[in-house]
Picture 1 (cartoon, helix red, strand yellow):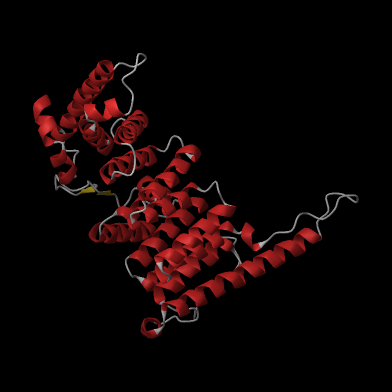
Picture 2 (cartoon, rainbow, N blue to C red):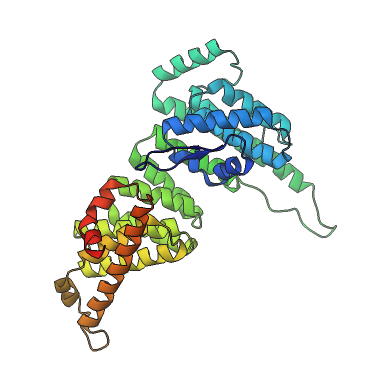
Length: 370
């Protein structure tokens, strides 16, 4: 039986200790990163039980759930379990000590214990390693982890280039192109991510920008840069990052939602023309609900944005033209507002609205449409 959080104002978390599909979905989507500490610990225990009691898994499924269990062990401070799981991954997969993926996993473990001494095996040695790491400067730990990943990069590149140098497609063909450390994108991204924990936020931003100059098609890094700019209050820069994602992933409804939410923030900041930015937010909320009709936050945001558009701003923006009369436009917005409010009311009745702050922001409108 699934374990369900019964609180009507909290996200419903379902954990099925014996459900393979559920655990694989957690691994693929990384939804566990958004869980509260108690639910995260519950998922860790469920995954532990599943691995201990289930044998009917394909090699790929077992690898995926082992990786999930490894990350859960790190996040819940179960260092011993993390190390043993890492060892199982090494044994069960055709991966060498110079594997890019294993190097990244091992770097997470080393970061967790605060040491690059991989020979530590006892609980006391791990405690000693943590005590040592707590007295180290952040830059020292960062340097150790970067050096470890760089060593692995060098080994992989050297081995691969030796192999390529000996491989000719024919007698006339030349050697294959040489690999560089930048080709190992998983390690490169991991080295950038280290700066989030060990460097200043300005350094981290610069690292993200440098990475994107080479890897412009990476939506995840664009999102990370946008989220970081948002935390810094750089709303227009964050907006540019989210727009990049909209181009790269036009079906990503969560990005359309965060883009629309940000445009409402820009309205309040006064950085852009009020009508233009609110009109954009309405269009982007609509795109989000077009892609995912049950995206509650997008419907709530749509209500907020529609209520914020003042007639005076429409007049100032010049939309009152022969092609699009002001009254017609206002009438369309009013109809859309009623539709969105009815949708939100329905979600409230079903108990799907969990954000009291957002609900209170549209309460008056909802009451008028009941």
